[in-house]
Amino acid sequence: MTEFELIERYFRRPTRNAVLGVGDDAALIAPSPGFEIAATVDMLLEGRHFFAGAEAEALGHKTLAVNLSDLAAMGAMPRWALLALALPSVDEGWLAAFARGFFALADAHGVDLVGGDTTRGPRNLCVTVLGEVPAGKALRRSGAKGGDSIWVSGTLGDAALAIAHRLGRIRLEGADLADCERTLARPAPRVALGLALRGIASAVIDVSDGLVGDLGHVLDASRIGATIDIDALPRSSAMAAQLAGAQRDVALQCLLAGGDDYELVFTALPSRRDAVAAAAASAGVAVTRIGRIEAGSALRFVDRDGTAVDSAFAAFDHFLS
Ligand code: ADP
Ligand code: MG
Image (cartoon, rainbow, N blue to C red; front, side, top):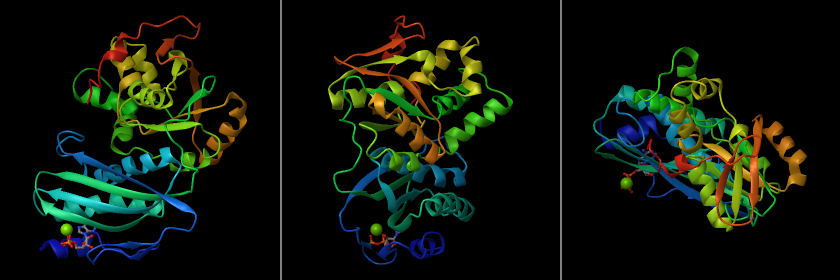
């Protein structure tokens, strides 16, 4: 099969939102009047971001999902995607499954694949997404203010638990293993929540590298500090079981510093609590208040009694990545 037959068979689809999609030298898109374009790109490299032999359909999902998560964190509506693929060989079974996973998520979000690039090489999956946000309304990392509440969607650390399991650092079984593997393979980008938080959240980031690192980016951009209540961090039943077990330290690192969560961490005035709850309900996502923005520049941890918790674990720099 030639490169062009491959593109035609697996990646050329009728578009809903584009003036011109796959097939010419460039796609043509027309942004809605009064909107800004949010643009982001993320690369998934075999052996670095996913295990060799990872299921193709899940990769199709994840390579788009991680990009949609970035748009969610900007409060942008996803509209268009471009897909750059390096593949070691033409494996039609792999391509069909990859395209299924990719387009299922694209269709769920009304995203058009409008172009890309295809080449032979070590497996590398690179997606660019473009979204729209009303001019001046994008959610940024830089708006957190002293006194704001800090919130997080979903639960933290489950994907990192799945990786820790594969690396033999912990042992997961049964439903816990299946749940964590599913979170790792098929993260759910919080697009609806990001859109609903426009006008409510003062700062937003998506957690791709772990809570400590990513909240740290918000604090840096906002020039402010924070205190997090470790006992308040939302956890799955798998995480709760690991935290109660022999490998508590590994589980705690996953909870605080594990990557691949793709949840949203955001800040909002305490008086917006009901608005935050309504946004979460409209998006069908649970959100949990986990701490407070405070003067200074430090990220501190306390337990439910307000006692300071040693944060040495936070110094581990993405040990799982
Ligand atoms: P060019 O040589 O102009 O870069 P290509 O031969 O790379 O064009 O691609 C031909 C067309 O197919 C272009 O419209 C390009 O955007 C599209 N395309 C290439 N690879 C992909 C892909 N993996 N997914 C979607 N569209 C693709
Ligand atoms: Mg090209």
